[in-house]
Image (tube, rainbow, N blue to C red; front, top):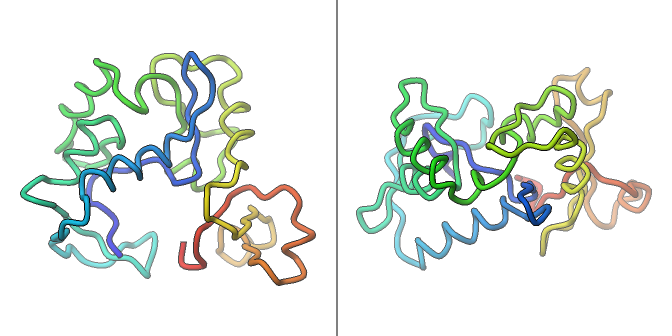
Length: 188
């Protein structure tokens, strides 16, 4: 599994808000990428291990000659996080149009993954004063097919982990009434 080099996209269970309200921008980003790929082979150049997620590798990936990183940023489904700014112009153009996640307000995907409710960076042109509350409230909605409940837990952070997860069938699954995140697999 590869993490795309130089870009960061909303998580599968991440929501964004616009003039019409909250929408599942993470799910929409996944669907847009799946539509582009359309069962064609994806070719990735391996750039080494991902320091944040040891089970993943970092890669530059393409399908049918289309650079996936650049395409995601140009279409407004990812942000530029490349230290050299490889995709900065693409992001600026997506923001100016405004496309996809840029049409409203969203949390920086990295902050969302870390559960930084108070300090999360808000991105987009139209962030209402209560944006953080709206964005973190809506992210507990379960994406289709994702049954694993995740919780940010203080005790997990003491051991260097970000949280705990509960799979269907374990005793803690039923007791976890309000998960902070939903995952589709234990690897996620």
